[in-house]
Image 1 (cartoon, helix red, strand yellow):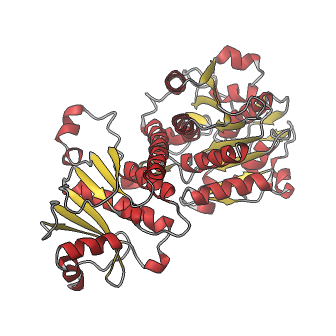
Image 2 (cartoon, rainbow, N blue to C red; image 1 turned 180 degrees about the horizontal axis):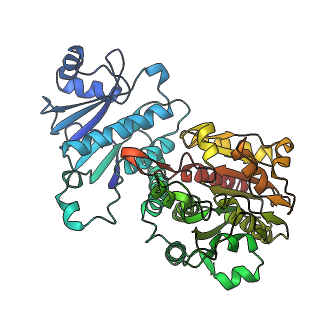
Image 3 (tube, helix red, strand yellow; image 1 turned 180 degrees about the vertical axis):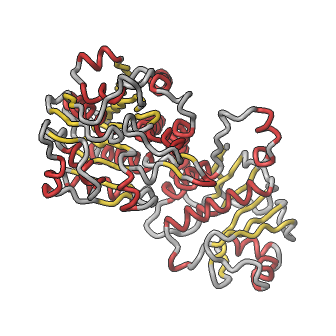
Length: 502
């Protein structure tokens, strides 16, 4: 989709579609009032008849409105004006773009960025509009046959150009547009990687994508192979990959755009490209969705694409341990003891608790970068889905200030997280008679004990863990990756960059 920013009067210009908002109680937005005046009250009369009540996300497409040179006028419900928030604004944008795409209009001009939203700058409104518009029109056709895709009616209908009308400084709007497009590009990459089948998106494929990002954006990228991982003493990581024919990779990415003496933020992404559960085999139902067990890794790659396009002035390191978890004659068994890079030993009580086994070695590896903070991202536990559903990401941390930063970033980016407890009371659940710890702590508090396990490898820096098991993808009819938590991570890093460059 192509975007442009325009100011001045466009009511008399020809467009496929003009998008304006209507609040509840038949209250027209300023741009809708202008069109209503041009049409001698045509919009008011339509609304008074009850065709649109102004409730949030409702839309009404009008054709050949008198006095308006555009083919269509789309009215979008905004809800109550007193309650119109950033979230409601995003919903209105999404609903409008989907309605235009369904109509067959190939281009449109939207006046929604002119709507007053409490505490929201024009830059942020335009950024969010671009992000949401691109997300609303995202399609994954990489694996479908081109002939079928071409014959698909939905594929024929798409919004190719969207003009964003503003009344304020164009410079701020242009800056917001660039930010929104950069974030959408990262979210799209994250979705694409998650949606790819596991016979395509292997550890090797992820490594190739990282190397391509490095080539495109000038990032330093290193891919460590099995022998390198073994030389580092990552026995926990290698214990997971033993049952797979696919070679493991440890991907290290460096975005070094901050000051030379600035300690980096490290992002660690879980990259299990397919999770059968290993010897502790999962049930067959919905096992296909275990291709999404690499969404933590995908979100790191997506975030790096976004911050690279933004040229974010910050030092950021990405670490991705990636492999498959498969059952095999050589696979790790329940009862085996693994020795991690840190030297701590781990009794494997359940091979399906494998994400923490690869993350713990990556978290130890992160120490060498002397980080200002480390954030790991992982589809780690089904228990987190039970606790928080599919709305909020689980957030655990050994530092309350870091946790607050991430929570605020999530609120600002409309990509929310919830701070979960990680008290010492839970640690004894990981006790083992035969090793320094077990890799599970029982059913009670499963997401918390998983975080407690990881915390034992993060003593030397400020650390947070994002459990995205409930937010990284959707099931059912709308099955597919969500791209979360790329918006949260991007806002967190952008906020750090602003603070560092004051």
